[in-house]
Image 1 (cartoon, rainbow, N blue to C red):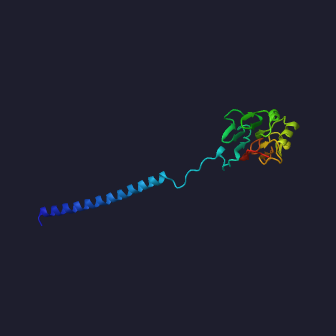
Image 2 (spheres, rainbow, N blue to C red; image 1 turned 90 degrees about the horizontal axis):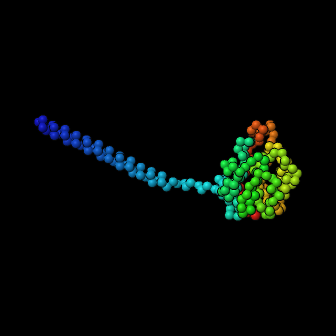
Length: 209
């Protein structure tokens, strides 16, 4: 064959090779584009929806006939107690409405908070009482009796720097199930001179009896 014929054959082979590479590249790219779109569609509609946050960040939701709550005693003298009620933080260090000693929130349609156990005398009936406490001196027999009447089992045993959290109400027939107590014991304390943090969450009936 002549030189011109060889050039034409070479050009034809080159064209075929280029076309083959183009087709292979096109289909590979096209497949990748389809896969990317499918991935984007699947990503925009996840198979599992994000769970809704429960009131007060609790693990479980509460029925309509109850109030959601979360109470923490705080950690030593560094982190103060906190009380969340129906998804409202009514007492915490951030709100700057806590102090040393007994921290009380009286709940009866309105929220009020004090740093004085003397006002326990004013608890009407019925009223739910949420408490975060790190007791100090001055918790006398009269005050202990008042909390016993609100349904406390442990208030009579409270001592210096014990941790105690409690929810109760006037007029209860039995003791309140919403109470935790941890004694200040040097051998068992998690912090130097202070016991472990107490936390309690759950659903308290709108009417406690």
